[in-house]
Length: 549
Image (cartoon, rainbow, N blue to C red):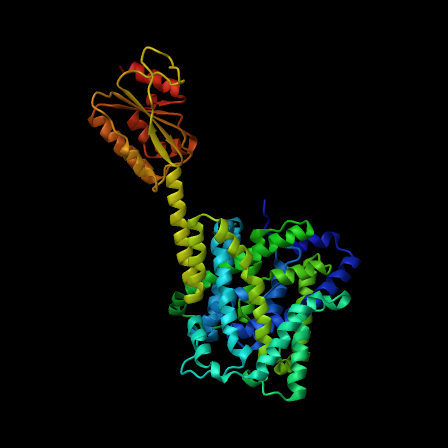
């Protein structure tokens, strides 16, 4: 049973001083990793740098405190960047706050209704497709800053294709100093993890930020920094209750559902990965409640949507974190950094942020999984995968998930309908019990049809193809392999019964399973057919047919 109880309350029963020290160390290291990422993801989301820190502090603390995982680290992630940027561009920060609060409420309801396990019903092809699509949109969105382009447009660019078109249009304004700084940062990010010993444990993103900031400041290079483009606040997060109207709720509801679904998928996926690393088991429904509470708190204190971050969670585990205390320490450390060091964030060059986001996009793209699916998956799955990817890049995540889910559902229905069969028997001679092929003998003027597979709306029309020949006085339907029927199938059974009554044919059922029998009983169908015409075995049905001769 998946308890609605925070994991923190369970692990504290056996908590030790030694583990407390390990959690503090892990929390500090994860905070160092989260700092440049939170700033970069905030900028990619179209908001000011400190809002990424606010998110990691507020949502990170609440989700660790209430969460269903021992080691989950939450904060801003790349999955939200494009959808957040779109909401901010269309509805402003006030709209983003409302959408995030609504998403938080949806997540809490999902958790309380124990929907944690339902996330698994979202096809892998869809999650792979939109994740790769998000990676491409992040990459395209950062080309401008990596090359130092000067792009002048009448309206802010929101659509990915508009950003890509602008890159080609203004490619002549490339800033070679910015490209040099971006190239140096990329080299550090790629090579640093391969250094020997202790150095490799220092986050490469932190080194890239420090080196690039020093180069631009001391060499006075003409490269835009965060301070040149944004006003940075180093103050504490301030509570703000947005003005909420019915029109705003109506407008933002699709975005809220998208945020909630993304938060649920990514957080539970992160929990599954971390469970295997620490030999534990998360509480999925409690994690959804915590994600909801964390997103609401983040929005009310100036943050953006948050979810479990797989990379930061893995770093927490690798550095000794084993309880939610590590995640809470990570938030406290970031709070201290916000108050003391945030003004220095103004010195970070924009090409360095772009380089960090390039690496984030590459790591989240899952291109190996994407290519593997394209090689090995059925054609229908490949269609869903590629279409979700293209729609994410060309339009947005809301459209991609909606179309992807509808298409996946339609293809699933098609597959299920193909495995459902309604076939007539071959018959042995009447005077023999069985023939040389092992076929059963049935009375004269009796037809037997074998139904296999679920009878639902996608396959129920096959019932109407059963032909009742002239001279037939009994029709046996063998249903031993039908585990479920729906209302459409029930309606077609009734039509078949009407046809049989008109032709004075008795309808007999064999081996009707529990669920179909329940549906038939509720519809009163068993009374119409006659309970004596429901037989437990095919041999009983054949005997019943013989009685009707």
